[in-house]
Image (cartoon, rainbow over all chains, first blue to last red; front, side):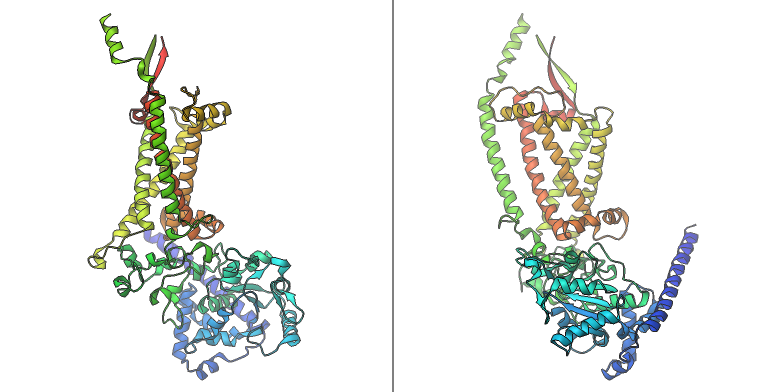
Length: 405
Length: 222
């Protein structure tokens, strides 16, 4: 019986994947017809950069797994990568540090993700484009006009709403960030927010937030794909773009707009130091014996248990390392308002001060409990005095007298 | 002539629920503080140790028990065959009694207000607050637990409660709320135990033992 159900289930899953495959293939054909020719031949470029065919195949396998697809999709992932540079991208910068762009563009040596991002058909990117001033503006207008409804709008940076958006003015016409964002996103095929600034507001919107900065989705009232992180992993961005190329739609998102394939599990769930957490082996202070042994960083402020991200799986800088591997706890940069909710970053959450006071919940709790205990002591003493004569009636002697009668 | 009779006040179900909740909450507070501020166990090999794992297991186990105790308590309040006490939770709406009760607690008057409900006006408010606290701690607890599971009860509960997490602003906020509410429980317990003793001392009706035997003493005129 169970076996029969299993095969039934397997058939259903197989059918689902076959349908998905068909959808993917027909979509890829459409992409090849509709979108402009690839700007660059990926394989030539890879060869030039010293990435072997074998490395590329390895990368396709890893990416297929990362996207939570079965191995039969590997050829399609490869095909999507070849067509990567067909996808027109407009990259906007608002209130941010350009760290996300930097993180994507600079690598110790180019791997497939970085090369892919280099081949991207960037129609407009403020820090990378050669054009400036009016020319740059013309590029943007042309891109929006030529690829209306087809281009991907990638946004880095939060939008300040204070002073009617005047904390941020960009370009020769001095448009506010909100004006540009409204204009471009209204014509984009999809809006992808890169980094926690555009996704959740990040440090600009941290308390007390003088410029009233907020995320793109909050400022414009649109739904965005949020590749959260400060900076996010290049894999999460390329994967989402590949998904868009392969299926013509955005991947499944969680309640905060983050792709589930990348942000579906917590840091804590995949952490290589997790066994030390369960064994109660904690680093008590930086550089102690526990730190040398690679114990859990929970007590020096690791926020892995509250953070959804795949850093531990895909790692950074060509998979060399990631924060917890390097010996510092997770600071929770993929979560909304992490500067406020996760602070202090190098102390565990019980050391967080309550908003209205500098004291922690435990200190306030102990003080309140002590005050209550003192109040009770006073009340108890007063009650004993106040109600001392209540038991005059029904004294044992009275009862005995009754008996004698 | 006055006579003292023993009257049944609490059904067995309520008493079981009360003590089960009391035990779970006590265990949850102790294990919860360990999870919040753990101490390191330095001795021995990592493979031989699982202290945090065990503490978390006990915490999750009693947390889930508390969820079901809460549901049971709500059921009893609405459908108990002995005395469905949901109306008694609204005793605080009687403003006159409410003020009288405060005077009684502040030892201004020697006699408390007369009420027919199971709980006094301030008591009803405190217990409503407790039910709210249990509700919040259960919801936040289920979110924190479910985040780490893929299957079973906790995963189903988490799927339902995930929007609450999003609304509150992530797991860190959920965890902070969970921690703050723990302190509300501690404050409640301190006051609750004192008030039970105080009532027993002042009214001499056997308030403390009534939650064990189920009966309370009442004076009736013959």
